[in-house]
Image 1 (cartoon, rainbow, N blue to C red):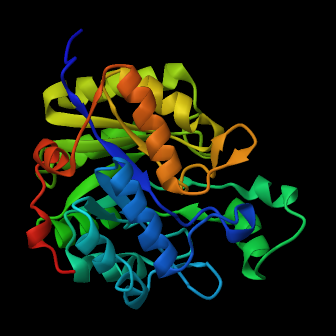
Image 2 (image 1 turned 45 degrees about the vertical axis):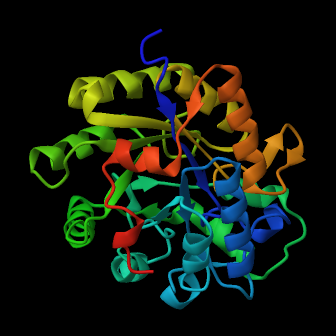
Length: 312
């Protein structure tokens, strides 16, 4: 089999900004919880840890650098994992808020959403009868009328400002058009290979989690960039997580799991930590005779600047 000796990068997204505390009692909210779950995920085999911050008092998403500083250095000192900081934040944040901590920290990697879109899980609110915090119901319901803004100017701003610090990107692509947006910025010389393309399926407003869509994203990326110019990774939201990322791995891709993407480990069973999901997908991949990339191998595959060149 071609590339049978390749290494698979496991990324783990620890908490995100979409799920709310009432959806799972296991969702990490405080800096201590986020750090603990991140370290456990790295120990389980995640080479990349993708991070958002939350207000410790009530779990709402926050861009506050002071909160990030309570857990990012802890993770960095306890693991060799690549620390990947969001620039997406949440749909409620301004661009200045979204970039507040990344610009201070200069991480090896940041996520970067490649287009504006409707992004919503507002239907979930109808299934929750008891709310842990007052802000949650309006936050979820309000997604129905919010656009996740990522204009060409926004993307250019992020690429230029963080690129000056040597930060590279997890390009989050929710639709085929987002791949073409990435190709546009490559043509402009603002991004250079190897590209780390995170294809995302199953979010309302983006591509559905259908195998045909996975194939479409893969062959489109091949056509636009050439297979040697990028690393393909797959994220399946919710119940699609494990089957979809397994399909992606079989197509030569890398994988992303974590409580940001799904709060379940199996049908009807909530995951208690993101590390549970890392261990499960690692077991599946190893049963398929695929090798798991270490953080050092991931850095080499993605052309990262190294953990000694960050500011946290």
